[in-house]
Length: 140
Image (cartoon, rainbow, N blue to C red; front, side, top):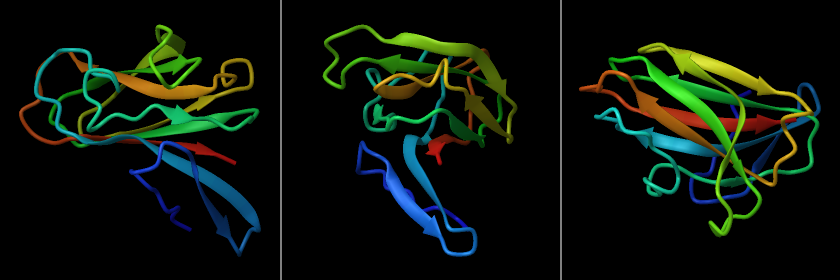
């Protein structure tokens, strides 16, 4: 069952599947970001496209990314203690790549999933000339 996503909310959106009786929560991390350079982009540099999401207390979560650009992108999960930019961001786990036109699911386990707020840092080694990046965080 597709999960509803709200891009206007910083918190997570619940969706219950009646066939499996499970509750999935999702939130948009990156909404159709048209990356066209090799700079590093985050919720601080591009707040119209990137979101810092408040995380519930969970043992693990997954981040799903769709890269419709014509270049490979580099992705780093970042966390923060607050949502008011009082503290610097920190990296969570290792950076990874998503192929041009591809998707990737990145799962963070309990030892790396303990952060109050999460977002992404995205860059490209070669500037894309078309397409966009979309990402959500999923908890269950």
